[in-house]
Image (cartoon, rainbow, N blue to C red; front, side, top):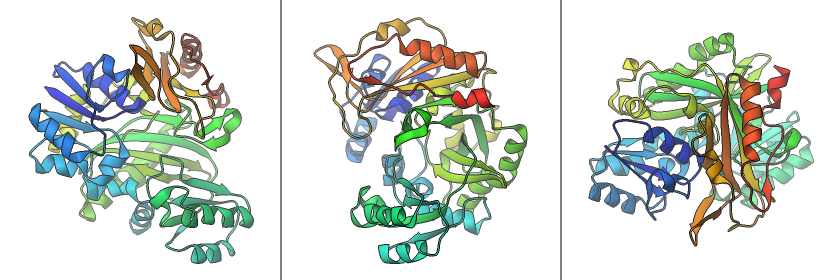
Length: 423
């Protein structure tokens, strides 16, 4: 098989690494890819939103399966374009990817089908939003409706903060057109857990749990980022939580989308909050999480191509999805100053230290080749992942492996998975 992966981050490197293990696959392409992906796939200079070029390339190379890793092309309808051209593709169509593409849509869906989530209201203009906030309890959460690279969420402790937040999102367009609509949501407290799942339109199979760390600095301080590290499994995702979610959230979401005429095939990422009143949905994503994919996929026993093809063909019920009985931790190595301002083009040293090291991975997120050397090309540069018999061992292994690599302005959090010690 020839496989094309669309995307350029750590998630796509993790997907490519899993695809490369499949005996079904003889050739992998990635558009546009990065320096790490280029070690196992042929990278092609086509952007993820250049739909016509992606379709033309897939036809020219007779691609057997295209895997779309990123949210923007999914929400934009790349799967539809590939299917129209008679090509097989993994991921939700545009009318299903709205589950991530519009927070207002997803909140309304949950309300309609009684899927547990935080109380909320949707707003199309700033004046109405501020009027609602004047009668609200604090803290409260403001969410830009559309895609905002995981950063379009503001937690406001006072009315004054909230007013500024509305101005930032809806008037100043801090997150661009994502802020044309806004969701105002009750602030929930509890442990956050991420659960990824494969879906074939009717059947859902959940993967092992994970937990992300969004804030830039230790102790969950600093700005929201795309994720500074993650661990899997979450010790807080108990058998009781799993049972509740299977009964009231997972299948209910798949059935709700089908009932709305929006059959969902691909990945549904459930962002959960484990509240005192039980698990509730914080958010949905319509693709693998980043960096959640970097700790979940290395633990998956199945051939990823077999699972994805079963999703496309509506026979996921035939798959016995299995994960290793161990743990994994990913620590993101970023450039100092991320997510605001940071330097690029800095040489990365020590990548060869991962060669031949079983249970250790260095997933490239923001890297490129320059004059034959691998250099930094983004805020999140690398995701250093390690497995271990348990979470504490995996965490120790991951942090040890971060010392194998160096680049100027290297920055990381030092408390990824610290919650493990409290479990």
